[in-house]
View (tube, rainbow, N blue to C red):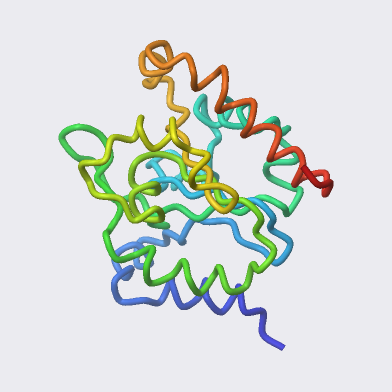
Length: 198
């Protein structure tokens, strides 16, 4: 019997919209599996992640794992953490950093993968693109407002800012994030990873 996860992977790689990547030997980058309990959705793989074939293997990843209270092994090898960015390929460089993910990519592939992961208990939305897409927000909605009001999106979604070192200034201006949001995030993640009720 064919693995449905492999079927979707092959369909993504063979999609004409991704032909330019496939012709260069670039594979779609995401983590999904039947045992996933926590889903992380961020923008798109960076160039380094795409070259390594590995998400969050940088300073942002160290910070993110600290925020979640997860070890390297739990994050990458527990099979309980799935990662589906808004695009599974590095979109390229723009004048102010990475280009945004292709607007229709997530709508095409995320639902197919989500059907195969029925036990997701918490979806962590990282950054503006993921938050605005999954929470159906206007582009003008400030991400700070969304994160500060994170409780209204629970229990399904937990919006946070990107753990990039570039957000240090934002964190210093918004001390409530470290004082209130992160402890709650870590508590919820730990409860799910340990399969115990909150």
